[in-house]
Length: 253
Image 1: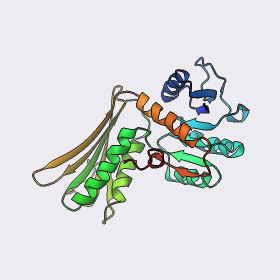
Image 2 (image 1 turned 45 degrees about the vertical axis):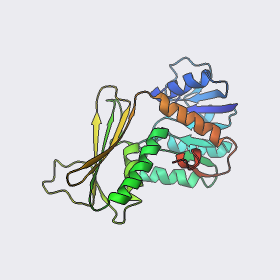
Image 3 (image 1 turned 90 degrees about the horizontal axis):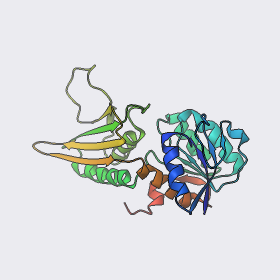
Image 4 (image 1 turned 180 degrees about the vertical axis):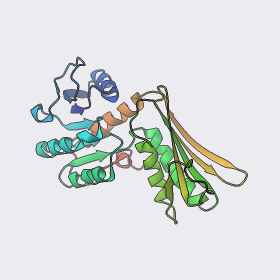
């Protein structure tokens, strides 16, 4: 059994993880952390992370960027592995995660879906083959309550593509304020917010007389919750270091 402290337990993703963990005997949530303690849970919930004294094998985080620093300090003090699934983190916070991984095991992924990581791998291969002949655009859609734009996943896809290109691209997030032709070195990233869209990401390679599209649609938050629970099992007992979905899936993609 994997014992979990769940940060952001009363948020949308936290409630999904709680439901799945309660239905699976391989998992046990020993405590929750959240600024809101209004939801009834079978485990104790703390609004102050310093008050949590329950033991666990790993911490799973689906909360808010503002909670990152105290969470990492708590994990380092308790010597616990931590899975960071929160999006909208700044470059400074990503460096903070990397620094923490020198003391404890840290799993960081902008998206916990296996499917997203598959299309990212496909996009990298496509970009390496098509470079110079195709324009690259990334379109992401999410529900109207999402705070960050573009999504962390869209940026992660762009970074993965950028890593295989010989000429490093420029990210362009909006075109309405600049009247000029598109540079071939651009990666356009566009965001749509509306309704209850769980998450859609599309990578478009537009060339002369042909267009290639790679698309992933999440129809339920369960795909992300399942990925986080798999990561929790994977991180139990790990040595210090920075881990990702590539490590979890063992190089399959």
